[in-house]
Amino acid sequence: MSEEISKIMVCIDGSEYSINASKRVLEMARKYNAEVIAIYVSFIPYYLRRLPQYAWEELHTYDVGQMKEWLKDIEIEAKENNIQFKKLVKETTSSVVKEIIKSADEEKVDLIVVGSTGKSRLDRMLVGSVAQGVMTNTKCSVLLVR
Image (cartoon, rainbow, N blue to C red):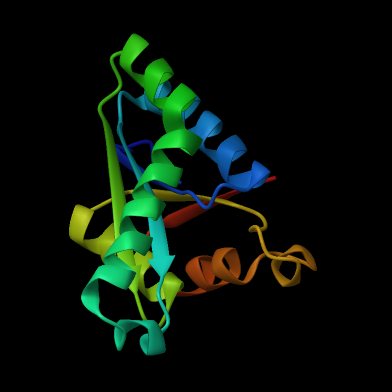
């Protein structure tokens, strides 16, 4: 991992592992004087997109609220330590992994930090499917946090 880390993206899904990852990111951001970008990708199945627009817009509003709640303490700590902190909530009808990687490329991040497993029971079997997909397919370095 290069010593030149100016932007770190942390993937948030509300799981214990993603919250631990966000805490680790703040430590790294202090060390490297890096900007932190927290991302949550809302998976909205295609069939829900066929409903009236207000239905999936409500899901997005709910997701933004959830992310704010998950990151409340982290954001306060970032502010207290003068760490530049940005939140992104993205939507996808296909792949959470692809959306994370696309956003990391757009933001030109140097490091993606992801929790080892997500919230679903299936994800808890080994390394989470999102974590595995990001590690396998992104161009930048990835830190897996347990």
